Image (cartoon, rainbow, N blue to C red; front, side, top):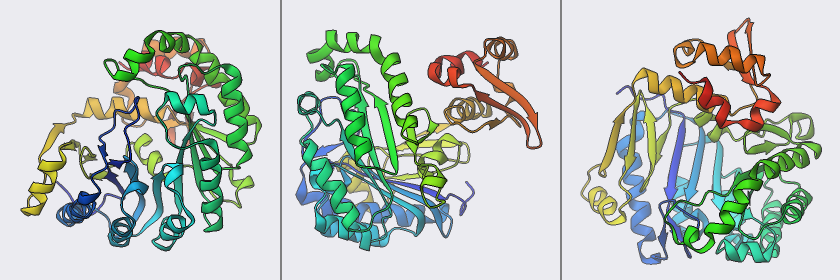
Length: 376
């Protein structure tokens, strides 16, 4: 495996105060006594994999779990030990963001915070098992602004059991009133067999029928407020409204553009040089391996060219920028491409950069269905 060229790093901090019913991420509730040992293990894993990374990175992303639930001294130690990067993002739950935490993040080089608001309606937050209330979201944003953060992203979820179209519109109004630089609006995905689907099965089915209209309303409201709809579920202030800055998530752009990335921590995924591996989700096995100086157990998957090409098309077409098809033609169904062009769902053209493909606005609303049809 070649080394030294990976410019994107994901670090998984699994600790949470409680587990939300809809969540299927690798999380660990509480365990404050293991935060130090976990950070020790992360730094040991980083040392073992450091040769894969470029000297300076484009992005570092701390996700979870709730990274800001990690004990403050350990979070500071971790941030101070990570490689320098142009964009350093930390995910945060609103109730964990105090003025002290905001200052800690800023002093340790974080320049972007992704805040999990999810909703501003108390009855919907209760359904989601979220601890933060609407005022916690506002207080967190104010604390981050006071600490001089000028790149804040808010997450919203729609399709929540009990949510109405009016609830969604009010959530969008509340989020936009806080003037975040970036907004992510996701459909609720409740995994089959979870306690959440058992509790809300019939209502989730009703919400599924409303998803298309919810999606269209989200795009209409957020773009009308001046945001760029740059990816299926993501919006940002355009450069002319952001002092010339490109406020798209550089880390997530790396995924959508098919770049290599390294993941550290339990359950973390890496994709490098045509291989993908996932670290064990077991906290015990992870800590034991790294305490012994070994790499943690991981599942390895070889990615043949046809798989990589298909993923490149599927992910690249989520963006509002054209996808250059150089080397990707074999992943496309030519007849489907012609049919979708006639239907006004995709647009293919020859440019100086090569043959380019993009979804039209109508095609973007249909999203995954169009892309699935395109793939050979």
